[in-house]
Image (cartoon, rainbow, N blue to C red):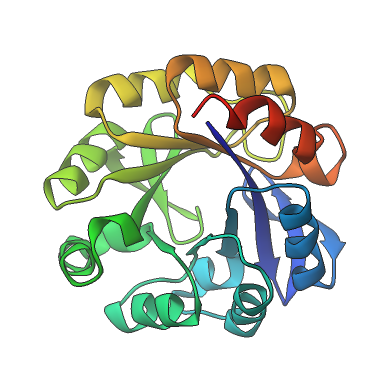
Length: 241
């Protein structure tokens, strides 16, 4: 199982939100490249980068920071937030992103997902399944829709998507543990590759995700608050691939 550090960008800075609430923000660094290099040196197999401003506005806002990260690290990047059209997908791939994450667009414009999979290959496209109580949230988690997470995953798989990021919004940033039951149910229902995000606070949490078959786990606050040592986590779980 891959242990993937997160870099969330807002106003060019590295931040973390509590349960996706933009009013509950902690700034951890003003230098995203330095943070990315730190995670690379600790053995990160890839880095998860999110443009939080982009997720809210529907367009890339922190592209310069994303581009700088891509130019300075050698590990693969998966990037999301504000990706609403094929031009933005291409822009991120050209900048160096190995995978582009589509969230709101998967709900609002599924044809974009199909086109991206056909144009770039399914390995370059991911769909973010961001959920509150099993229902999908969009627009930087600010809007809820009546779409069930499982239904969205199955619809996206039918369009060619192979890999999903599942985030339990209520757990995100809390360090109180991921929603293991929901992750396991999604894996069983879809048979897809699932990367879990939200709530990871300990190595035991990572152990539980590995046990239910998660392909990866995105870790944010636990790294920034020193609750998990990335080097140790990668060493422990990297051999389980």
